[in-house]
Amino acid sequence: MKIEKCKYYNDAQTACSLMIDDLVPIALCTKNKLKPNVDWGGGMGNSNSLYSYFYQSFLSLFPEIRGTFFLPFSEHIVNNSNGYSFYNPNFDDFVKYYLGVGNFELAFHGTYHTRLDILHGKANYKYEFASVQMEELEYYKGIISDFERKYNIHLQGGKYPGYIRNEAADLMIEKLGFLWWSNDQRLMINKKSEHNKHYYWGIDQQVLLLPVNLNGRSLCMKLLQSDKKYVYNRLKQILQREKIVNYISYLVDNGLILTIQEHFQNLRFDGKIQHPNVYTDVFSLIDIFKLLRGCDIYYGTNSEIAHYLESYDYTSIYVENEYVKITYNGRWGRPFLSLKSDVSALRDMKGNIYEGKYKNGMWIFNELMDGEYKACQCSL
Image 1 (spheres, rainbow, N blue to C red):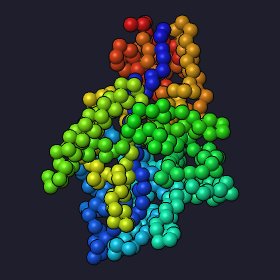
Image 2 (cartoon, one colour):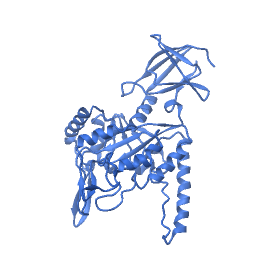
Image 3 (cartoon, rainbow, N blue to C red):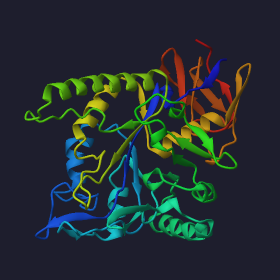
Image 4 (tube, rainbow, N blue to C red):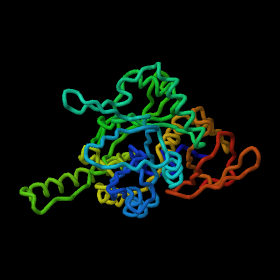
């Protein structure tokens, strides 16, 4: 009997997650009405909300997509210098709404994310984990535990706000028990890099680090006809598109994870556009996922992909004649793994039979637990 691990779930070519940062209960208002499509998720399912626009214009077209919303737990920067008023929904309602949208998980993105100081008349943004101290560990343990208990979820991983951190922050993430974390996008975004692979990080090498390797606005092609350099800039865009299409092909062909970076926030409080963002990038995202539809891809949340990769790395397979023993030694409690074999069915020691699914000349077994199995049928 031949049996081996599949690199990705259901023996897919690769895996893909859509990561959207800064899900925050804030919406901008004018005359006590939500300003269309410029909230940070705070509009929830309202008719003028950003999420409603994003769902109708994009997510509904690609129901296969799964991904991760990165959520700061408490207050975000609110600067009223542009005359907007703010709608802040009840935080409980806000969290429960996004837990219920389906296909997306919530992940840790700090508590306050960023604070704004004015120094010598200039804005100075202070990221939460740039100056964090280990003395704050118990505070973070408490706020995460309270959140998990209140909403009956377990936060498996997260991302530093702005990818900015100090050494204490790196140590703290491991101490907080996170199973995965998002790598610094500056190492590999939109470029071939050794960091496009996952690896393990921390003193005990227990936190799985996922790449952040594709900018969601990469295929934006919008230009104004009045642009004085229209022809030049149009040609530049065409060449950029070709580069990104080739880059996506490189990731898929080499079995490298695709993790697509986006933000909910599209209009900042200083009046500037936040890039990337799911509002202005919607047509770019449509183009990206149209390209991916021609590929064999496992779509998962960051936690699902991290669980699979860790299971692949920490599961051993021992075969002797018609018997196979699966042993998992990872941190998730149980394996999440696909196996492929030249036999069509396996029987465990309790007599339960597991039938494989035929694909690419082999039989695929998804999510077998660790234990001993016996082949039920003759080899192909």
